View (cartoon, rainbow over the protein chains, first blue to last red):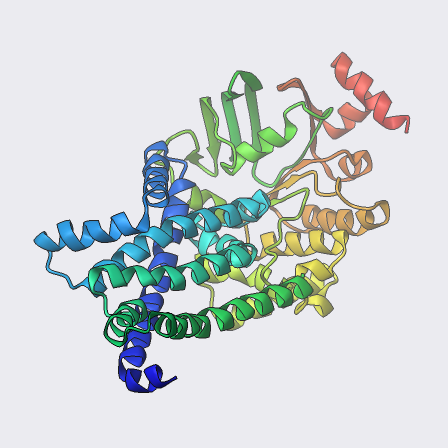
Length: 213
Length: 245
């Protein structure tokens, strides 16, 4: 624990960056993922193909490669820090998985819900946003929960591009204190501090939805 | 004036020829019942009227709009053409009252207070005012269907389509739903197109009966004529089979 006391500000600062990257990526990947799920389900073949290509691409390329691409290649054109490059990569990578969860959720909703809404006079967009998506997200909660937990853990990718996150600081502490074991234990505990409540929260939500069914 | 007009309409599902050379005119205010064996294309036909199914050939005019024209705004038609489904299709994430109020609010921009008053009046009319704040999952099939009818009526449509509205109901629930439908047919000048197996309802309410089989219209007669002496042999056979049980 002496290590923690000594390097407290580094750990706390890294923790802050990890939370920030996770929150930004969570919102961004949810929005992007929903968008690409809808694109995949479009009746227009070209749109559906585009949505599918996006999902397949980002789902099947290692997160590290995407991150390095933004940090080394894209950053040459558009200036960005490691934190930004890592968060963007994390958002895109996660959005592909979220798109799959949301798509499965939408497909699990009875077609009659959409037809009823359309026949009632609602536009496709209104029917989707008011009727189908709220029900689809409910169905997708367990799988979205998994994605969010993965997202928090995957945010450690920022360490590779100087993203100032928990993992990055952990590496620094390990290198300067020579106590790698304790350093990474502390880092791991900080990650648990984020993922465990998230995990239990999702479990709670899931149980409540079971009851309301 | 005709509300619905099919001119040489053809509909395919891939290789399957679902609607064959449909020619049909339904005047505003008419109540028309569509009957026939299952798989005859009745549901497909009624679903083309509000564009839930596309037609491949011919012309389909609904309320003056050409549905086969890609430029036609389907939402404009659906505003005036309500539909009641076999499986109700109530919004599972909304209360009964919200089910009825949603479309008038979003589509017609009806004033919120007026919207609620009308929705409650409609619930009263179908005998379910006490269920206003329930979720659809708490209702029986017959209650769901009556809410679905109220939801359609809230849009004040010119035309109502019923796609086997009682086929998924327990026998003791059917009467209440048919009673509501009958009142609509008798009290309003709405055009009604009803796919059903309820011959009693057809006899009592319909102006005309259309018999379909294998994607074709085989008979289009006045109700009286149809039940007395259908001219088509398959219609005759169908009628005797339905009457015998």
